[in-house]
Image (cartoon, rainbow, N blue to C red; front, side, top):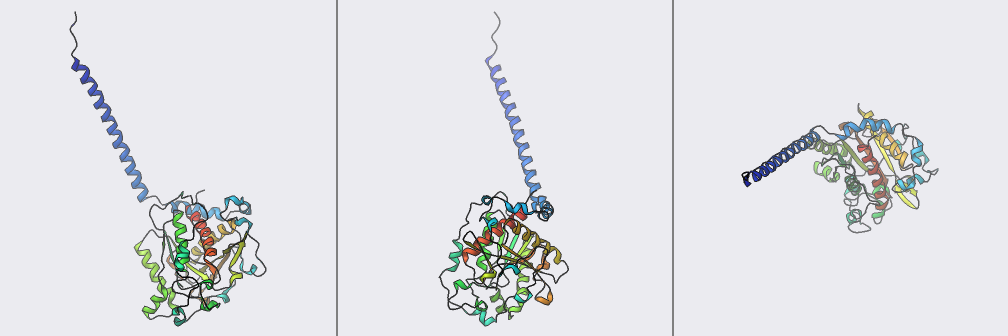
Length: 358
């Protein structure tokens, strides 16, 4: 009769197998953790989506054909492929991307400081709440992100530019200025729309008129003050790539508004200063945005004005960055709803410009 094998041998063998398996799993976990850390480190140091996508995007937007403007209306947030063609009154404002608008005589008013500080009564109270409560008309699919980086800086050189529908006892464009009901509310709308699309944005609502007063300066020095703001922002945040000075036009409603399917939209106008050596880069940026707008939403963008030093400031702080422009959104007669619809569209195009992949 053969001797019985010790029971402990089986137990020891089982324990050894378990320890070996646990050791293998631990090594795999450590290896996966190292790979994950290396990936995060690479993304943090080297990955810049704008750097790799911008050239490809610029090549594409210059070759877009009119075929793309015939997309199904379900693909467009506001059916803007059905935009009415401009009337005779507005046709002089519409331009091909390669044509400069000859409109130097329609520049903005230059109000006195007394006029800027005049507190006009509003048609509604809590005007900021009206703008804040405007909701996006569609669900935004946030498929892209700047991963916490703020890359867009919105500011307002003429921060008290206001809108006549919200001012009592005046219908004069030269009186459309207010300390609260002004263009900074539109900048906040745009900033919010860009953030919803994953594009990190700072919307600066500094009261430039108050800054001018505190420095003993007049309205003509507005761009000097915002120049300081922009340079400071750029020093403090090296991720900033796009600088947008948002204004509203001083022209009346028929020159700043278009209708689509019974809804009105504030039209956009780009201004590029040619009074510095590198203005071609700013112009290329404006042309890219205008082309995309004109292809997807024909009629919403009125085009691009190029202004030299003999037509105004001529630089407009655009020497600070190649992606720096003025965007006029609507005019003195536009409403919050009209402005909001257009900021949503502009945010769509600007985010596509930034994130686009072939």
